[in-house]
Length: 451
Ligand code: 5AD
Ligand code: SF4
Image 1 (cartoon, rainbow, N blue to C red):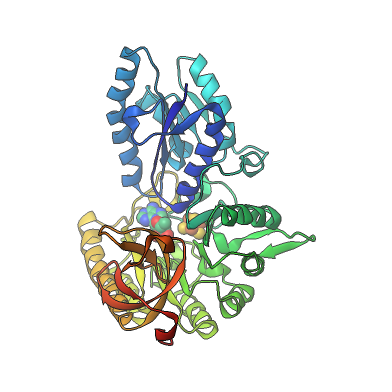
Image 2: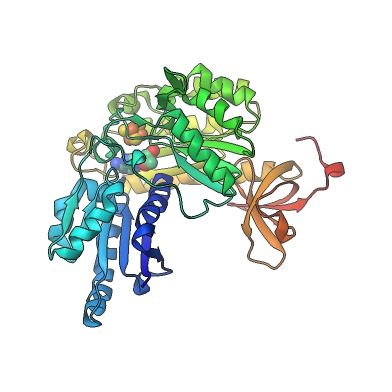
């Protein structure tokens, strides 16, 4: 009989990709997707450890799942409960101690061992833990994707990080930097396109540090890989995330200049505008280096827009440091951003600093920063009104006859369009701007306004 699998995904797009791969690994064991945990024979929480709140959410979700698991047992069945992802990697044994109803704890590098772990957990009473960094790569063991990837799909090309920013858990939970061979990436891309993808977002914790084995020997950087990907028939759009300012090399900048399919939108986290704080964070770049990178990219692709991540209240951050962040934001004008209060992560160097910033100060700074960033995002959205933009239609809208797609800048665009255009790139005149989306009208070829 078919078994049902429910995966709840937290955190970044890498986890979205990993969740899809876990579903692929379990499909041959007879697991089909379930709509909710209630009807599932196996529940996987694919977790994120980047900030404290993310980890705490996992423990409360585990609490909510316990009665479902108990109910399954009373019915004579069994619900297998697995915790995957970065909380699993960081707090493996702690999870089994705090939530003994968990059957499997597995880190991000061991998904290909899931079938074996499920078999072991089914035989045994206690939980099983697998948070190794195995020598064999999970990418060599994962089956080809079984579910269609959708019009806009993700493709992991790189994992892990060697940068060791002092606030960040990634180098500990995801391990050292690893790049997949270019041929494997291109083969997966061809598969995704054959299954209907038109846009591919290349994923990596430090994606522009990519240095995968080249098909003819040697290595390719991200710029070279993007050129090869752009040559794959059927691909309309390429994106990549997340990048580090240190790894913006000339080849990548030139790809932005030469490859039309590479979207003119880049998420490039700066974290802070204060050189003192950037140095304390071990970011290995200053504010001026960051601005220079944006300038290089703007020269290569004048219509490019940027988004960033920010942390406020890093240990020792003074009002002056914070004002340097505001000044940098004013200078750049971001199209979109993510900003967070600093959250001490156990085991990271910054967590051990003694000059932690009071939570009230963090909240107050975050509110000021977010007010500025939101105003910039709205200004950017409004600046699109009257323009003609290409929209990749991805899904039905809320209203009849409406489809929703994405602009080159990742803004959702709502427009009236016949359902058969789903998955197509269409030209739209932007007629309205909301804080988080745009309204468009479909343009015929003849009506297009030069962008
Ligand atoms: N506290 C707050 N924000 C953090 N980030 C990473 N670690 C922390 C932390 N300890 C943010 C950074 C990163 C984004 C993914 O999450 O801004 O770019
Ligand atoms: Fe974390 Fe990114 Fe710094 Fe790596 S580069 S340590 S992933 S913030």
